[in-house]
Length: 188
Image 1: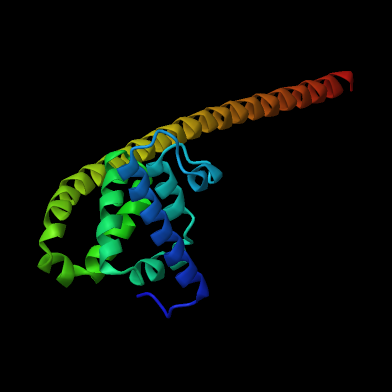
Image 2: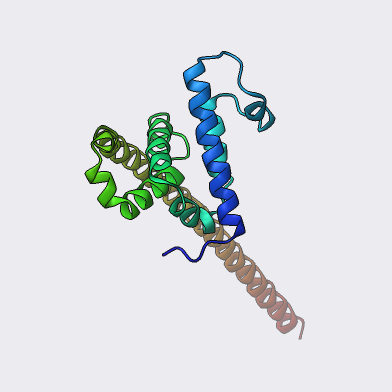
């Protein structure tokens, strides 16, 4: 559970609310040029700006920051998070934010009709994206296991080759000793 409010939490929440307001102002104005603040952050789009804004919140303070958001900003943020999920941007962080917001604001979200379409869309999109990430992680894990097996196989071959060379060397030394012993016996 989140701890007490502190200055960084309040500052993070203020920046997030400012970013949410700026995002919706940009979307509503339909201006081709991004506002100077978004350009200053190096954002290519308003959605990219929001992804960066969320990314900049320290993971340890993410929940505290989300906890202090007013309900109207929670609704706006959920719409933005839905867009981020649909565009496959920062799926892990977005999922964490969404699940925390749904857990904390469960009652008001269910009681407010304007949340229903968002929650319905989020359910399907979130499940799809988490499945995609899980499949990707499974594929990566399978690939890593394959590479590990290949490496171990190569290492085993090298060990076998090294053992074979050592046995040959021992046999050669043994034969040399026997020949030297035979020569010594014959010379007597």
